[in-house]
Image 1 (cartoon, helix red, strand yellow):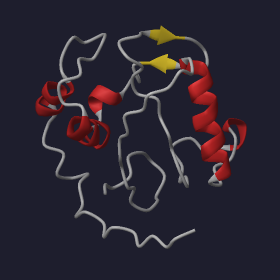
Image 2 (tube, one colour):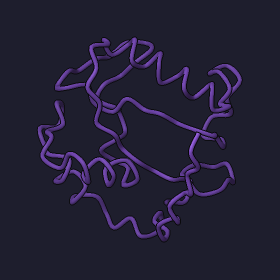
Image 3 (cartoon, one colour):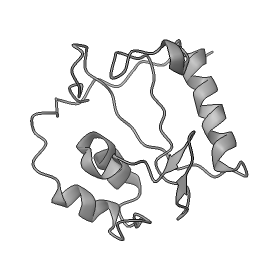
Image 4 (cartoon, rainbow, N blue to C red):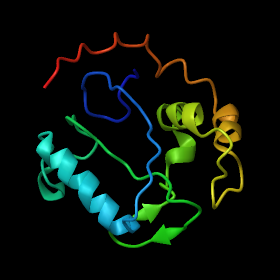
Length: 132
């Protein structure tokens, strides 16, 4: 759980990372992630407040060792190496993955960041899940 980054006052965020296996190409995977965001109540891009509060923010950080730069998608995520709240959960699941542009492991990128104590907060209580 971390404090928000940016100029808009808002609540704290829960940050997580997931490793997926998919046959989808990156742009199709991004479309699915965007659909999940919309289903969770996040408005489409033209209606969003930049750096504003959101119900869900799913980013495609890496896709194997591919480097992609298009108007719709940039992989690796262009600011992931600067953000503790991205690198920490990613390092928890994939510390030895090498950033395809910077040539450093996720663990090393995290280690090189300045202390991020200002953005960290105590971990949130695990959610109580009820059967569907």
